[in-house]
Length: 497
Image (cartoon, rainbow, N blue to C red):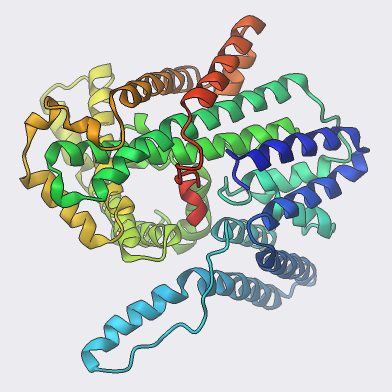
C-alpha cells in the first residue's frame, strides 16, 4: 500500500477516524491491527517474518533484563547474540543469499567448480532492513541498561510495526517511539495544530514525490537507459537529476511518515535536514538519512572504537561503517563501492583538514563569509552527486560507462539544439519541474534559516495563508503529479532496501 495510492487514501482516514473515537486503552490495539493490515497489503506471507523478529527480540530483551538483575552478564550476552543471529539471519537469507552465492561462484569460477544455485525463489520483503535494525537497537539498548524491557508484548509489537515508518523509516529508537507507545493510554492525544501540521507535512511529502521525484526520474531513466547515445550534457543533467530525485523521493516518504504519525499524536525523529546545504561530507551525513547514520554511529562505529583510538584505527572504523552502510542499501557491489567512496571522502577530509586550514590562513580566506560556505556547499554537492552515480547504476560497469560518456563525449551544443527535451520531459514538463524545484528551494531555505519544517512553518501562519498554500499544493499534485496506468515509477526508491 503506497502512500501515493488510492488504497492508502481510503485506509488512512479510516484509521484516523476510528483512532480518535476509541477509548484510550484500545488505541494501541487499533494501531497494531492497522499496522499489520498495512504490512499484509504488500504480501500476507511475510507478516510471519516481522512477527518472528518481534517475538524473538521481545523474549531476548526480557531475558536480558532478568539476567542483568541477577548479575549474569554472560547469559545476557548470549541472548544478545541469539537475537542478532535470528534477525540478521532472516535478513541475510532474504536479502543477501543470492548476492553471497553470486560472489562465491565468481570466486570458484577460475577453479572450474560447479556453480552453486539458489533453490529458493523469494521476493525481498518490504522494509525488512528497517524493522530489523529497529528491533536490534532495542535489544542493545536493553543490554546497555539504557532502557527497561517492555513488558507489554502488544505495545512492543506496535513499536516494531508502526505503519507510517514501517517500510522505509525513519529507523526509530525505542527511547523515543516506544516511550510514546507507553503513553498512549494516558495522555490526551487530540491536538488540532498537530493534526494540521501533520496533514501539511503529508501534502508536502506527496508534492516532493509525485511532482518532483517522479518527474525528474523520467529524465534520469532515459539517460541511464541509453548511455551510448548520450554525452556530457545529458549525463551531467542525469547525475544532478538523480541527486534531486533520490532526495525528493526518500525525503518525501519520510516527511509523509512524520506527518502521518504527527496526525496520530506521535512524534517521529527527523530524517532529513537540508542535506544539500551541507558544507562537508561529515556535515552531509548529519543531515541525510539521519536515523540510519546515527544508528550506524551508535551501534557500529562507536562499538568498533569510534574516534577514541589511534588515527589509523579511527580511519578503519570509518571505512568499515561506510562499507556496511553501502551493503545495507543493497545486495550488490556497486552499493558497497558507493559506501566506500563516502568512506574515502571522510578519511581524506580528516587527513587534509590541517593543510586546508593552513592554506586558508595563508590566503586570508574569510571562512565566516557566505561565499566561503557557498563554495563548500557546491563542492560537497559535487562530491555526493559523483557518488550517487554508483548508487543509481545497475552495476559498477554501467557507472564507469556513465563516467566515460560524461568525460569523453563532449557535446555543449546539446544545451541549445532542443535535444534535452527528448529525454522524457518536453518543454512543458521541464517548465513544471523548474517551478517545483523553485518551491523546493524556498521551503529548504526556510528550514535551513529558521529551523522549521514545513508543517511547523505553516502552523505559525494565518489561516488564509496556511490553507491557501495547502490547497495550491493539492491542486498541483492532482494536475501535475506523475501517476496513472502508463506511469510505473510510483514505488518509493528506499522500499527496496
